[in-house]
Length: 146
Image (tube, rainbow, N blue to C red):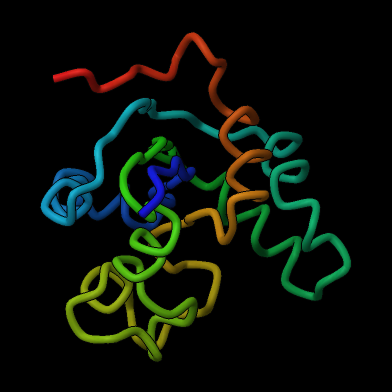
């Protein structure tokens, strides 16, 4: 199995619910290590660039408005098959479809929309390779030697 790194973000809805620690605990209990982390208030420009891939979609402006509505917690997770494992922990994109025990099932309103779904995670190694340096310099990534 490959050791990977993936970008993870706790979105404004989950930050507002004060469940950062509970979400971090799930990452760690699953065997993922946090190798970088910071809280940040995204600017409209940052959110627009980060979610540029969705710019032609009808929900794009709503997503930008939501992602700039409050601070986010951004982290880089590392571990064996970190990308797939993080996506499993997050659950389905739509909270109403998320499996019981997943982050989205436990911390989202099941009737809520797709955007307010508590967490973001890279969906592939190529995406992670673009997303991690969007928020973190190489110097900010800390090897977990112990």
